[in-house]
Image (cartoon, helix red, strand yellow):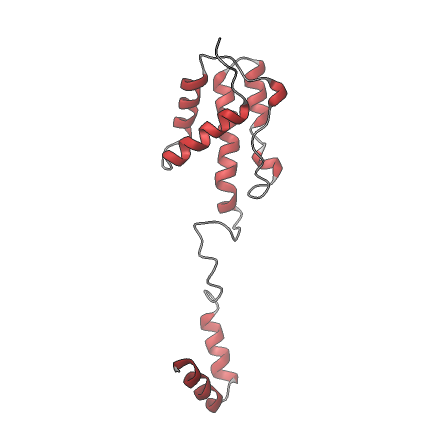
Length: 142
């Protein structure tokens, strides 16, 4: 008899798939989950957890697929299990981008001047006396 996978095992498998094929579709991930685990036993509902992602996504989001996984286990439907895993996977991947968090890797958050440089220049031109501006320019050049 095959060893029972845990929901965590399946979720980690899905994460690994996304890392190896970042441009792959979520439907492909579902299909691969069913292909890999579909002929084996269902996970125990007592271990209905996935790794915590509180540092990336609020708990209600990273756990959002678990009720669907539970339904899939109870109904012995691997497609539902895979669908629930992908729901949580989508939340973990997409929440930082959609929430405009500073740690979203696709954003250049480190440049704090971006977006204010023009306004800052106008303010300095208006309120900074020319002799102080010259002094500041000389300090920058040396």
